[in-house]
Amino acid sequence: MISREMSMCQAVFENMQLLPLLPRFQIRLGFGEMNVEEVCKAHQVNPDFFLEIANAYLDEAYIPGEGLSRFSLGTVVDYLQGTHAYYLDIALPNVEARISQLLAASSLSDKEVALVSAFFQDYKQEFLTHISEEEQDILPYILELEKQSALEKPDPAFLQKLQVYSIREFEQEHERLETSLEHLSRLIIKNLPPFEDVQLCQQVLHDLSDLVKDLSDHAHMEDKILIPRVAELEKALLESMHKP
Amino acid sequence: MRTAGFILAIDSYLVRKGLVSILTRIQGIRIVQEFSDSLIFQQYAQKQEIEFLIISQSLFDRSSELFVSRPGLLEKTILLKESPVSPDNTPNSISLLEGKEQIVAKIRRITEMHSNFHPRGFSSELTQREKTIVRQVSLGLTNKQIAETLFLSTHTVTTHRKNISSKLGIKSVSGLTVYAIVNNIITIEELSSKPSE
Image (cartoon, rainbow over all chains, first blue to last red):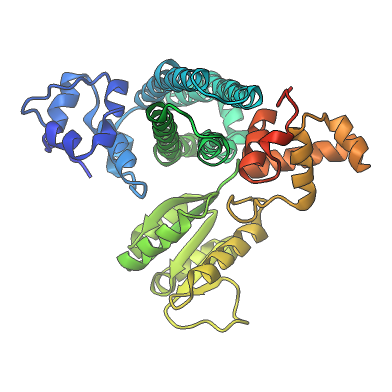
């Protein structure tokens, strides 16, 4: 677990899993003697928020603390968009390029190549749909909820919607994007003939495993930090309606 | 895909973490929150919706008011006892003396009883009929063709396809094909030269 007084260098050195998180906060290396809080402030990042995310990443069983109510949902939404952009612009294209390279240099049959290519294309499509649904429906809803909560007189139409919709529904339907990728790894390990380029094949398996881990952490963070905070706000707004 | 959310209210650190390590291996189950203190747990439980709860005997004894005020909660609760539980005892008790398989079986029973959760890893096992359908989907057959081969209505095949997708969390034909290969439902050699539509 990391804390605000900890040296940022030490925090990252001991927890290399934090590395992919840093660019999502626009945090660059070269921390010098700065502690976690100082680095966050230098990059206009809310330290409480950074700590919540980092600790949720490091410990599956991490329970969000009081820090949760100290940052705005706008901050969370920014972070989620940053993460989505990382998947779309970096992680997925990297895996895709490596897989094509692996297939091109392999002695796989046409049928096997077609199977893997079709799988990855379909996966990518599902991934894009999933993210665009979140960006078009869920994130704007969250921002609107926060805006309405701050108003003296919230919009009655929004309140009406709130009585029938809750973020918990989204949570129920929240699909896991990592499952299919795990099957692809198994296919390579178990069923496909061995690839001649052993290094590249290992790299692809590592990429897939990193992406699976990252997606699962991302879902964990949405379930443990974002949704409880949104649900809290929904509840407070609904209760305020019944007050005179 | 739906996952079953569990709250753990157990005062012993070792017991709680032990249970976490079992639960996290059961796919389709999510640990929502852990508590060791009865007051903090009760504060939480007053405000939040609880899907499933595993609670130690001592915290349970100290939370009696909560169970009075939340009548539906008891049936979604598994009580963790230090003493052995007799086999005909309520299915909602686990003893610290029980083995992993028994514990997993009881958790599985309570999640299945109360909802249509399909925790992956056990109840997500496809039925024989579903496996047949996955096989035919992998071979490139359309729902209509599958219906004709199996003497079913297209509607029934569509329903099977939906159930398969929600059990596995896989929608696409290519995703199902890879699943089928990895799980020995079909071999790569058997695929037609065009593995998906």
